[in-house]
Image (spheres, rainbow, N blue to C red):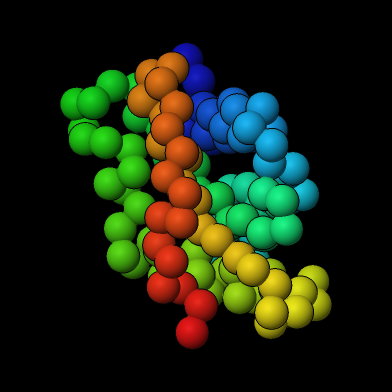
Length: 119
C-alpha cells in the first residue's frame, strides 16, 4: 500500500504531464519554504502559473478542488510572493493561480482559481 506522499508525488507527475500536453512548461516542482509549498510552477505562454494539485480517489469526500479553501489559498499566495522575490521575478510579470483537481483518473484544470492574490 502506498503512503500519501507517494500518491501525492504520482498525482503531481500526472498533473504535470497533463499540463505539458496542453502547452504549459513546468519550471519547478514542489517549491518549499518556511511559508508553505507550491506543487508546480509553470509557464503558460508569458504567464507564470502557480499550481496546486489536489487528488481524491473517489467523490466520497467531495470535489478535490474544495480542499483549496481560503486559508490554503492565502498560504499559496504568500509562498508565491516569496518565490517571486527569491527568483527576482519583476512585479509586472503576469501571474496566475490554477488548481488541478484529480478524482480517480479524471483531471480538471481550474484556471485563475483565485485571482485576488496579488495586491
